[in-house]
Image: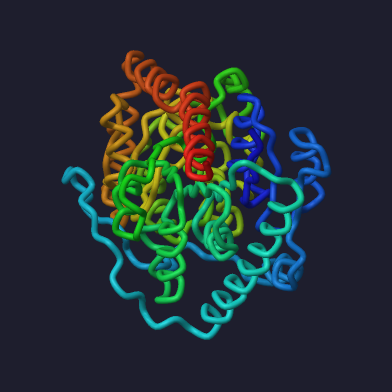
Length: 424
């Protein structure tokens, strides 16, 4: 079995899929949707031979790293980006509110969208050349925007699996009529669908997924690898200037679906009340003013690599993700693996985790007081040793690497069998 993976080669999720595919004996070729840095190439070199890794050469992908470096950092208090997506904080079971027509895009957004779509066409041409030269059995696009859009633009002739995660269908598909139409075309072309939550499997039907197309729900990074998950190291907190204590972690960096100001206000309330905990906001350095951090108690870090995030997850008592739109965040699953209690906005995709048996707390993502109360409730729950043990068991049973291996192995085999039957 040989799979051509179209994915962002910089992403730890992509590397998780490559590790997973290699573990089940699948030969893998990667067509990255983004240009790689030297560190990315080194990480991929440990997984794939150099001839199996391909990068885009279009102008947009060549210049966008330099443009990104010029962009000023987001500041806390800025309104979350692309519209709401989901609502229902307060125990409604994650009622969905799908995005309506987006506000008129500004010039910058229109130019970026045009550049992204042009790059997708170029990526599709690269895919066509690789299919001809490498002769894979299956093409698998790990996101819809813009990897699956690229794959679908390249035409038929080989089975296409499409993955969606995060907000691909809740928000990203609605940024413009053009992206909506291309998203629909990608799902109409798909021969198999992978989502990181059952909600997206249902939404895919509304976007034109053909009746009878196989659907599979697996973690976005291929699952948690418990063989390499680190043990908790309390001394590691000193790396970030924190003293020993129960750790409340925000692991998700800058996100348009999260009100970072509400989050930091909630942490401030908890510190003012004297709550016995340490607070770590990963990826918010430069977004939150240094003056609001408290030595030994509250720290913001720059973006961290995946190994560091796993060490933090292993230490976390509470993981906070007050998002207004989401799939199944891998950082939440990693927190569960470490035994933490998640505090989240009440979304349908996250309620799916609770339905598997996880102990979770729900909050209003826009209300600092609600977030703070949720954290206090989660800390009380975590005092019962049965609760962290329960969450670890749920993570291992439902979101582990081994379960995903069998799902993916069977899904790919069915795709190839179906294609062979059609040809004969």
